[in-house]
Image (tube, rainbow, N blue to C red):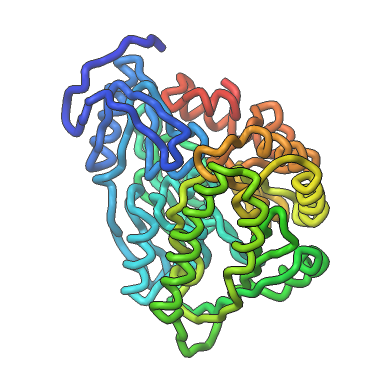
Length: 447
């Protein structure tokens, strides 16, 4: 394809050529034009026009990926007008939603209808297509990522074809496009499985690192949803167990919830991170104080109010998916690495789990999985820490989260994913001219 540029004209074009930045601020791109199609038909027309103009196309959601997966110097598609619930099918127990709908809006709307997703991640700012296309997940013994709850999706391919995919219709595309990385086409609608809204009881409890590691398999087996945070430079963890409850509902008191989730976890933590960035030697002492600030608590509420929480402190994140049986060894190595190095780490390490699924490029594809996520406050030098963590994770066969910082390439991914060639062959068929390519996809998928 040629690389000539085009003037931003035509329906739906914003066309300022202004830079786009992701949420964390570590990725910037300057598209030739931006478009906001209001329908699949308008989107198809924009894709054909981009191809005629020799421009690549990427769709962006809320920018919560830490990689450049959505960056483009061509046409940036904003799905702001592709929002809302199309239909709820109570017989099939599904909801069909436009791709640009934020998860927050979907969760609230479903709750009003007495419905819920089965599992979700720990934030809900992303669009449904952005979250699923990058493999966003929560934690679960039996229930998997958001993408694993997809029952059908609509995809506009490079030639402007609108394709519906499900286990029955275009099943080979469905097997890959649920986590499609934006490489196969632009998702315009998603049909999720839903269930009657239920109650979850969350039990949050401080626990020592050695005990969590020793009892990790037991904690995973005994709870529907288990996760924990380890505070580097300490032996302290905070554990969270979410299990279904017959009720009654017992939400967090408004003041108490605000104090811990907003004042401590966002306001005070922001100040502590700022201090740590300015004075790194203070970080271990801050970590010891922070790890003791959150006390045990139990509450019962509807799913999205238990699974998710506000995250206002901006950071960079790396996350690797390990075979679940490798998690405890990797975590011990991670702790030893931090303690034996001059690194000063201000953010806790997050550990979650997922069952195996059948999505080609899911980080849990074909294997029981544990996720280890590391973070650093935005603006803090991250290369040394992330490089050391990545060395440990790759030694245990880790798969990097598609939307979080990593340095892996297509050769690594081909070894890590048994169905990698299946995905790339489908990409060759659906986008032979690489309309949806960018530097990131060239690195992780090849070209």
